[in-house]
Length: 215
Image 1: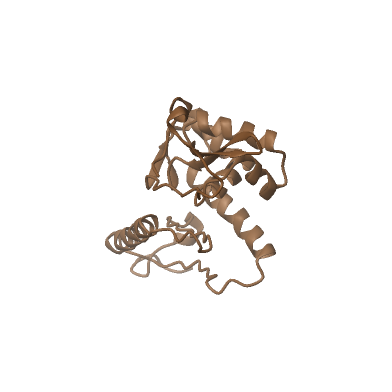
Image 2: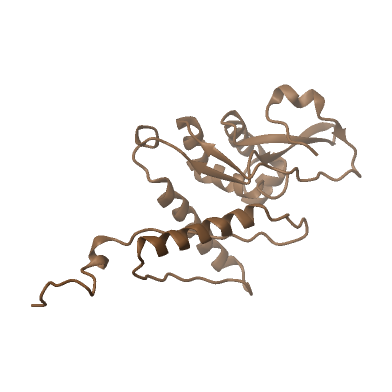
C-alpha cells in the first residue's frame, strides 16, 4: 500500500471491504520539521500522542479517541492540523456503519527538527525530544508491569575529539539500523532514546595532565 499525502488524493484511495485489512505503508525514514506551523503542530501534547499511535499502525479518529479517552471530534481536529502541517496523511478508507472512515499514519517514521531560533522561540529541539521521552517513560513505567528489555544508563567519560566522534558515529548508525528495521505487525512498540552531549561546565574541570597546582 502506498501513502497519500493530501486530500486531493482521496478519490484515488479505494473504500475497503470489511474483510480487507488496513496495511501499514512503508514510510520515509525521516522528515525535517522546518516551519513554525509544523513545530506548533508537533509540540502540542495530544497531537504528539496521536503521532505516536499512528507511527506504527494506521488508525481512525474513533480508534485514536478510544485509546486516548477523548472525543472523535477533538481527535479529528488534531488530525486535520497535523495533516495541514504535512505530518499526518490518510492512507486508507473503510465504510463503517454507512460512514467512510479515514485511516491515518504519519508522513515519516521520525521527525527531525531543523528550525532557526526565531521559529522555535528559543526552544531547544533536543531538549523537547528528551522531555517527551521522559514523560513517555514515566507513563510506561506506571502502566507496564513487566518489560524484559527495559534498560537505562547515563555514563560520563572524558573523551578525546577522535573518540567522541567514534561513539557519535556508532550511535548514529544504531539509530539508522532501528529506522531501517522492518516493523513486526504483531510485535510490541518499543521506544529507544539516543542522546550524546558535552556535559555542563561544572563537570569539566581541568584534565589530569593540567599543570595547575591544587590548593
